[in-house]
Every structure is written in structure tokens, then in C-alpha cells.
Image 1 (cartoon, one colour):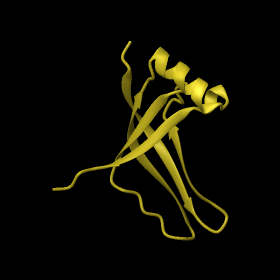
Image 2 (cartoon, rainbow, N blue to C red):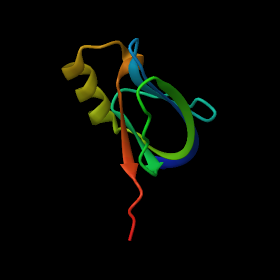
Image 3 (cartoon, rainbow, N blue to C red):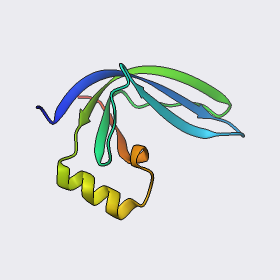
Amino acid sequence: MSRQFQTGCTIEVEHSDESLHAHVALDGEPAMRPGDAIQVHGDPIHVAFGERRTFRRTATVTRASWIERTWTRLTAGLEFGELYDVSFTPRRTL
């Protein structure tokens, strides 16, 4: 089984008085486990104050090894389904 796979994703970003957040939803909603990492690819996202926008991107999911999952559970102290990492990587421009 491969430790990495690519999938599409939807990113919702809000920048307002009520909230400043970014939510990532992976296509097909694959089960995420402690220590798994998601890297979202594409151009930088800019949302002006008072806006809420939705973007489509490609993401790479890297599955944690057994030891990484165990270590994450032991050190984080959070619920099982809440332990994963999301990062955004802007596309390089020449």
C-alpha cells in the first residue's frame, strides 16, 4: 500500500469579524488517521476582510506509519479523529 496519494479538494476560507478560518474537504472524504498529513498545492490564496471564498485545488495525502500514528496519539492528547496536519504549498513562479 502506498503511503501517498493525490486527490482533489475544496477549500473554504473566511476572513471576517466572526471568523478567520480555512477548511479543507478532500474529494471522496478518505478516512484520516492520527499523524496523517495533507499538503494542498496551487497558487497562494488571498481573501480580503469581509469575504468568504471557495477554491478547488489538488492535495497530496501522506499516511503516517504505525509508529508515527502511535507517537501522535501519545503526544497530542486529542481525540483519535482530530489528529492530522494540513499545509499549503504555493506554486513556484519563475
